[in-house]
Amino acid sequence: MKCSSIEFIKGNCFHFYNRAVDGEILFFEDEDYLLFLNKFKKSMEKYPLSVFAYCLMPNHFHFFLRQNSDKKIFQIFNSVLSSYVQKYNIKYKRKGTLMAGPLQSILIEDDRYFLNLCRYIHLNPVKANLVIEPEEWEYSNYSEWIGIRNGTLFDSEVFNLCRITFKKYKSSIENYLEHSTQDDFVRLLFDNKRT
Image 1 (tube, rainbow, N blue to C red):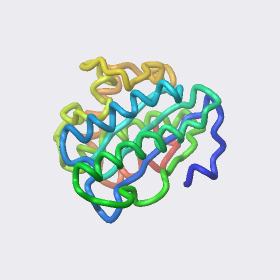
Image 2: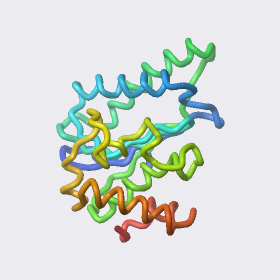
Image 3: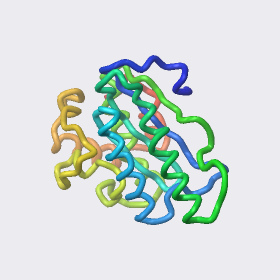
Image 4: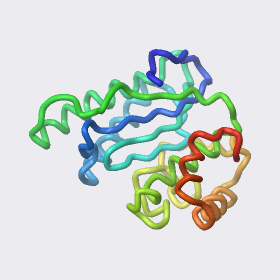
């Protein structure tokens, strides 16, 4: 769903995602991931928000955010992507757009869906066979969720919203990885009834 068709008001939660155009790579090396994340952190000063879950993948990204002011939260991506793509194009000697289309967003109104969405976001690198365990992927906030890193792109209020603890979340991820299929993984994103 395009951002223009959603009402952005203070207190609402959203899943934002986008991917690189024509199968291109969005992040080639550590420096690229860090540049994007640093630009995002800096832009948070202008766009107050809570980061519940995020994951940067080689060719796409996911963010689960809450809007904490009257400033339309999707605008942070306009700022971050504009600056990131400009530097990316210079670095990799390319021209033109890098994103496949407009930023996509979903309004998350049912808190029963929060936990599934976080699991989906954090398990992306495992399901893409980039790592075996989600904590091995540096470019998500899963490590904050399980208490082994103290990063700034994480609002621990999400534990109250999801009614879960560090330990229970890690256990739920491990259990999911042990007993789930690829179809179950896709269902995490689309089935808002499961927790």
